[in-house]
Amino acid sequence: MALTDITRVEIEKALEEYDRLGREAFLTHYGFRPARRYLLVHHGRHYDSKAIVGAAHGYLPGRRPLAAGEFSGGARHAVALLKGLGFSMAKDPSDQEPPGHDELLRRITKLTVNRSAGRPALYKPITLLWAMGRALRGEPRLTPWTETEQALTGLLRRHGAHGERPRPDYPVASLCRDGIWVLPEHSGEVPTAHGDARLRRWFAERQPLGGLVEPVHDLFHRSAVTRLAVLDAVLGTFFDGLDPAPLLADVGLEEPAGERPGAAEPWIVTAAEYERGCRLIDQWETGNEGKRDTRTTHRPRRSRAARHLVLLRSEGRCENPRCTGQPADVTDRREPILEVDHVLDLALGGRDHPSQMVALCPNCHAVKTRGSTREELRAILLRVAAERHRGVRAGARPLR
Image 1 (cartoon, helix red, strand yellow):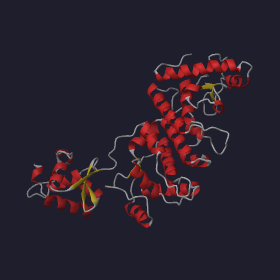
Image 2: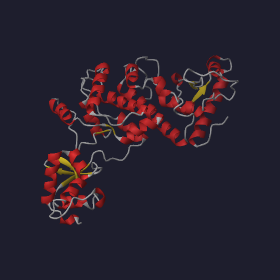
Image 3: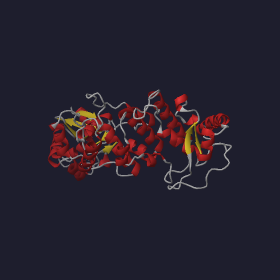
Image 4: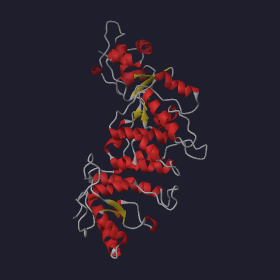
């Protein structure tokens, strides 16, 4: 077996067979998986480079096709052979470094959307929230185009407040180019999210399986802090002046279920997760300094992620060191009766940040708000919030 025996003639025969059978049947026949990194480009079409080389070996006189495990498809082997024969190569657009929490938030808050009507089009935000809800519920990351089209068409009709047409192909094509969405069975670039008939026809003909790139889906599924921080960013960036509650309920991200630590997530937070969450909140706070919810002009915007971190940090107990006993009862969801409070009012310059927030039982919250000793208690709580904030970031358990 020698790859160097393969010539352009054998490669072109393999390409002809690929075109005749179609990608899925070709890969199945020769026992290869879709390319994870390199694609062969020929006459404007993209091919799985390693599979093509393996099949081409079978066109040599007296030789058989090579199995995937018999040679390398990397840059120094199959790819080098193809380049040496004059073929062009491209990297699979889904081959990217997994985005971390900070990069994920940056990509989403910097999404390019159509603003020709003077307001941001909601195609991509609605699509993201739908996918986020699926990830939260543990549903499959990739869905057939018929399912994606049906779900997003309905959501765009019901919640497209800025003249959006029920066209799921627009946001999916655009999110693919943003590096947030992937169509794994399709080689090469997805058409740009412009035009009309051509884009619609492209999706109708290919019926692509698709969904969020795996690292993003996994972050949304396993990290409530990331999920809530992204939700804060999406709503604050694209839904200003709108009531997102009906949409959030429709996609399964309604506030009560989205915020609560709940039985599915234990009352514990690691130092790394707490640190990442605070960093995302810092970004959100910087980008929204002085901004208010225009639906209630006197109410500053508030972070769901910050509230979630404080509840986890509290481990389900009132953080007032002078608490005489929080209610022994629990909510209908079997959760402690706690209220997250800003020690310094936001309207008076306080921060929407765990370092200035505490979890209080109703009794302590009432004393802090209306009690005759409230100023003394506020000073204590501000110190406690700062200490607990530092303690969790350092990996220490909160002081009792």
